[in-house]
Length: 248
Image (cartoon, rainbow, N blue to C red; front, top):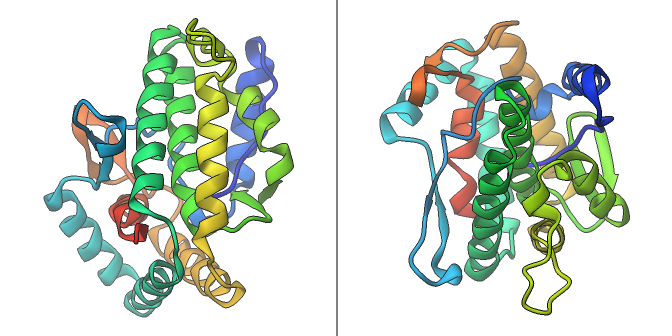
């Protein structure tokens, strides 16, 4: 699931950079600008390795499927086929999924605790989900978020630039380890991206179907009621529901 945008921290500059980046995101994996991370539920026990993703509520996924089938049935069938191919190609282990799910929960909690304001918190949470989701349909070359390819070597700085304003995420645990929550997120995203093994042909098929479906949904795709009264994009809902299928 996969491509990123670059923001400049500080006042309105950060806001404008984020807004401009969202406009340049590829329709391939378009995400609403203010969709909170409420569509994903983290299931976990006391052991971090037991954490896993669950998809959006079944009723929400059913509604999203019906909308996509109605708007562009051939493109939706192509998307399903491309995602099935990506899932078959994936070599991501359940342990890697669990680690990434735990990272998302940890960094998400750190973002919420930073009191960045409603807009910036929602924006960071959206991007966090993008970083996690898109790693499953990319490879060791880099991570795609929108139109931007972030080389793996640039990922640590990218994550710092976007989530570094959450103090807890950049603080060490105090147990003698110098690893921060963002360091761990970067490491686990990189590991998953390397194991996604998605072929170029599958990337092309995903891009083509996403472009068609995005055009079919129009300029205001956020039509589905979500938790907390938010509106969600049915294409995003459907894609998020597939995250758990990539573990082998």
